[in-house]
Length: 139
Length: 138
Image (spheres, chains in turn green, cyan):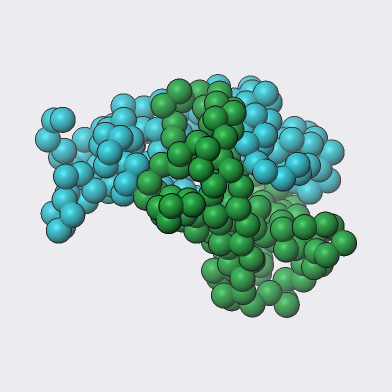
C-alpha cells in the first residue's frame, strides 16, 4: 500500500472491531535465521513475532504521526509456521479505552498459512501518548 | 518429562541486549520501517530516550523460550500462550534474566493446563516485564 492511500490516525475516530485489512507474505528461511540470531535461540520457531503481524496490519492502514509505545502483548501459539509457506494475516482493532487519562488501543492479528493451519493470534496494547511512558520509564 | 507441580521453578535464560540484536529483530518485519527500535532520532523525539529501545516482543520470545524448554516443544508449539506487561524498556548494554514458576495446574479435556508466572529483570534487579504464560501438557 502506498503512503498516499494511508489514513491519518485520529484516536477519536477509531472504532472497536474496525478491520485493519489483511495481507500475506511468504515466510523465508532467511527470516527464521535472522529471528533466531536476534533472540539467540537456535530452536525458536515463531519468527512471526518479529514480523509483528498486528502492528504491520495497522501500519498498512494508518499513518500514525503521534507514534506509539507498547504497554503489553498477548500471544497464543497454535502451530509453528513452515518456511516457504505463505502466511495470511487478518488484523483488527480489538479494543480502545482510556486509563489514567491516557488513550490506549488494542490491535489484534490472526495468522494462518496457505493450507489453513492456524499459526498465531497476537494482541498488542498500545498507548497512543508515547511520551507518557517515556517519562515514566526514565524514573 | 518429570511431573509438573505448583511452585516448580523453570530454568531461566539470560540475554545480553545489543543494538545489533534489536535491529536484527526489526529486520524480520516485512515493512521497511523506521521506529523507536532502530532509529535513535525517533526514540529521542517520541520517548526522550538517548537510545532506541528493544521491542517488547523480544521479551515475549524469551518468555516463550523458557516455557517451551519446560513443557516441551509439542505442548508449547500447539497450545502455548505468553502475556506480558512491560514495565521498563531494554536498551543496548542491558542484560535481562527471564524466569518463571508454576502458579497453577488444572486437568482439562486436552491435558494438564499449566500456568506460569513470568518475570523479566534487568542487571540492576529492576523488573522490565511481568506476566503469565501457559500450555497444555498431554
